[in-house]
Length: 119
Image (cartoon, rainbow, N blue to C red; front, side, top):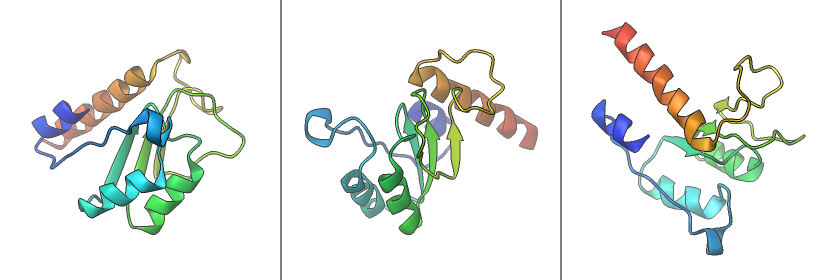
């Protein structure tokens, strides 16, 4: 994701949570740090679908969130700007068993297609 976004001249940085300290999902403290860097868009990879509080905090702080995730959809899931997850009930993607990296890769494919159409 980082390499693609840099290749198309997006000013991008990344945040990798310390799993033993921060857990496995998106968290408010991470978003505070991301906000301090001046981000207005956050793209998750392999997390975020169940991180309702963190996504809400991002939204309240003027950060749009695009969630790319492959985990099961919980009853109460995040209200992100966009959710890309083949396990969503209304998703027509034919293969529901993608890993998180595969979901993120398909976002890149879609972005690349759109950017080529805009040329």
